[in-house]
Image (cartoon, rainbow, N blue to C red; front, side, top):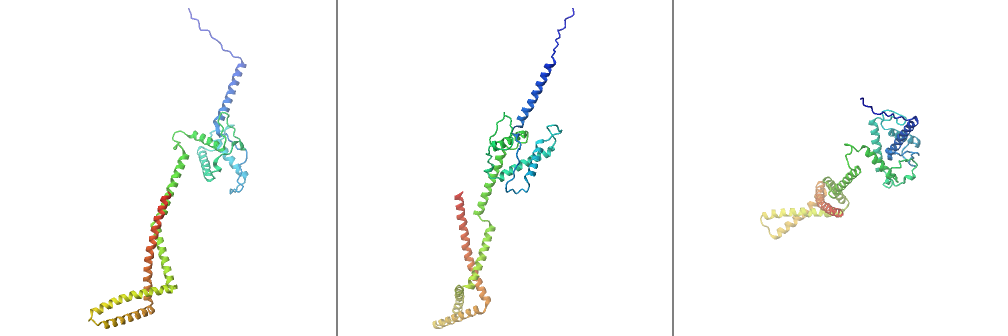
Length: 328
C-alpha cells in the first residue's frame, strides 16, 4: 500500500496584504534610518545659522563675508568625511590623510585659542538658549545647558570614536599637560631664585671689576681736586720715607766710631733737615717719582676698599638667602 503524502498547504496572500507589509517595512527602515542616524550624530548636530562676526577692533584684515565663506568651506569639507562614492546625501571631499590633518590643525588651533584668551571668557557659562544657531539633538539624548557643556560633550564623543587599540596614550591629556606645566614652572622658579640668592662667578667678577674701576676713578678724582687730601697723603709718604732713611742712618752711625751725644744729636738734625729738603725737592721736580707714590697710595686704598666691598657682598648674600629661605 502506497503511503499517503502529507497534505500540502498553499499559503496564499492577496496583493493588498503584500502591499501593506512592504509599506510597513519601508516605514520601519525610514524610521530606523532617521532616528538611529540622529542619535548617532549625537552632539555633532550643531549648525551655524548666523554669520560669524569679527571683533570691532580685529587685527584680521578680512571682511566678514569672505571669512564666513571660508568657514563654511572648511565646515563642509570636514562634514563630508572621507567617502569613496558620492550619493544624494554623501559627497566626496578630502582624502583620508588630508581630512585627519585638517581635523588635527583645527583642534590644535582651538586649544591655542583657549590658552590665549582670558580665563573669564573661556568659562563657557553662556546659555545655549541664547545662541543664534541650530542644535537639533535627538530627544533621547541629554541636552547640555551651557556652551562649555556642549563643547565637552562634542569633545568626549569625538574621543570615544577614536578610543581603541593604541590610540589612547594618556588617561587624561588635560591633567597630563597641566601637571607637566606646573612642574616646569616650579623648577624654573626655584632655579631662578637660587641663582638670585647665589650670584655666579661671572657676576661676582663683574661686580669686582666695576668696583675696582669706580675706586680708581674716585681716587684719581680726589687726588686731582682735593688738595687737602693730597697733602695728607704726601706728608704720610714723607714720614714713611724719613723713617726708612733714619733707620738706615742710625745703623751707619752706630757701625762707625761712637760719637758724643752732642755730635750724634747734631748729625741727626742735619740728616733730618737734608732728608726732608731732599724729599721735598724730589717730589717737586721728579714727576715720575710723584706718580709712583700716588699709584702706590691708590693701590693701597683699592686693596682696603676691595676687602670692605667683598665683605659687604658676602653679608648681602647671607642675608638675602636667609630671607629667601624664610619666605619659602
